[in-house]
Length: 400
Image (cartoon, rainbow, N blue to C red; front, side):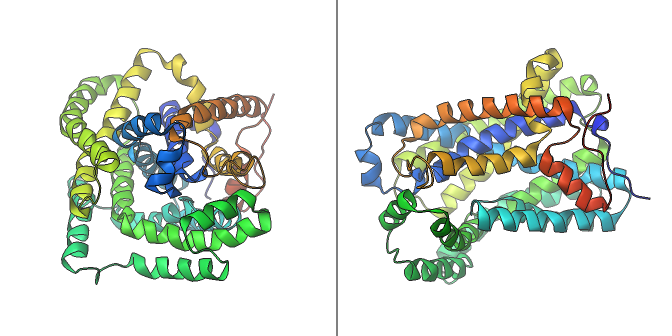
């Protein structure tokens, strides 16, 4: 009989990495939550913090953008492997992902169109197809997937727009916007600032199309699948255990990834902030050679620091144990700060404030997560997900 993975069997370092990744993802998402990414060049220049924003934007693209979602994706792959190993059932694995598809759709159409759970669940369905491959084969496939956006963007440019699967979604989003009277980003920003929740739900429909258009245009599918496969390989070999034995490898691997990723991540940050009309192929190349290598630099650094002082990271572990709940809570916070249903700061906030907002909100999440986990085994959404997966009652409160 398939049994749920016991809460006490979780690996502390994986929860800590999840918690840190979620912090970075939140900072990145604040650009969309706040409406900053929808501002025109002139509108950004008109903000009182324009100069400071540009400095932060460079730091963001160089050291934050993509790195933490890459860690998050890697951890999903590890989690899938751990689940398959302990549940010993492919059907229960697929049931878990189908439920996640439902959660992702609800998240996208009720809270935030920038949902990532639906994409993760759909790509996760492919993982069993690779489960029997050797580590070498998985790495070859993963590297090819990581580099594939260079070829895909070259095809876009050489075909002069004939190869552009994202255009279907952009056109559908535009049709929905037209019905709502939205003809520009400015119209969209003004509407969000004044919208009540019923209007927000209408905006989420067009936002869903734009989101998936963006996923195609940014070649997110092969990138995420590659990280899932690497994570699955790490998970099935349980390389996250007995960390002291892997210290020399972690130091060596971090150095290699830093030498590859650091120069290119500076270039990636520069072209995204200070260069106009960057060729898609150049952006794809700098992304592939910077974002994922730097993500591994971060992972290795966190693990090495954890080995020196594990207690210093418990703060992040509380959030990481309730990743799904805290991810959804972050989306919900946008209504309080930025939308017309709250303080209506959409399109009015400079990016330089994002770290301060992220630290403040994340600290609150860590405090609430610690308080919740004092009395309960799982986060509320994690508990619901488990119950639906296994189809039986699972005790929520801790045994005292």
